Image 1 (tube, one colour):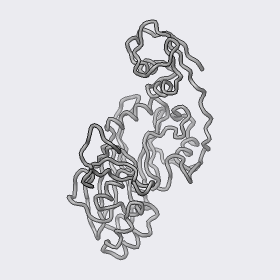
Image 2: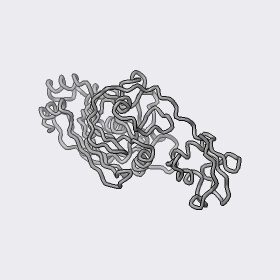
Image 3: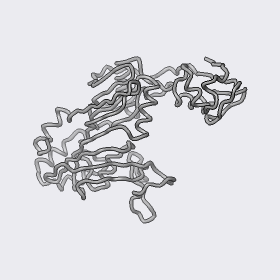
Length: 329
């Protein structure tokens, strides 16, 4: 589809990406930026930049590509839906469910289950992650929100960037942390020796670079607030509040602090098991089929109504008895 129109009074003086977002066929600034970056927008017959300021009489032409056919197959998987309307779905994800297709999980993911549940998801020009605003690792259980249209997707994404989303996690860790509460902050990047892992960026002194820089040389800034709620037999029960949401953020920060999440072999939890005081608990930790991280609380502003929404869910029923036997619930 090709849109041809002149700069209107409401578009006059606006950046091109902002002006295009006023068109109902485009609707969001992120969509407008995508079209501009792909060279599908011309102003007065010439390709234009997103930052171009429109003038009276400017002629704009936009080529909107047809939606790409998706290769995703619907997956009949029971979802625990906490809330749903025309804009968002809030889900309590079980451990073991991958959020979006990846190597080894092409059609048995949350995305595939969402396609089975609803035909209305934010497709973002045919991306393979419809509706996905944020992620939880496969073994992490808990709450996440999914966008059902592009406008909701953009507004939720903005809230994550502005750090206005409320997120609380709970974790069982192996080891010890001092002090018992504080803030862990660093730049995270791919681990130099293992592409499956992430690690904090080190400074020239080989210490973690924990001071924010306006122009970092590498990595993404990550901030995790932690509190040790209970300690027993070499295990810790921790509450985590996220200011940022980087890949593996909690797992990296806790492991580098000396207390990897129980069951998280990728980040060294197996090496800490011998430090657990109880042989029975050692056996129980070794037999875990997941690591013990749970996204317990999620709060955000509804992208359309502006209502403040808050959701909370306890640990899954198959984990709670174990935590209780360890004295943590």
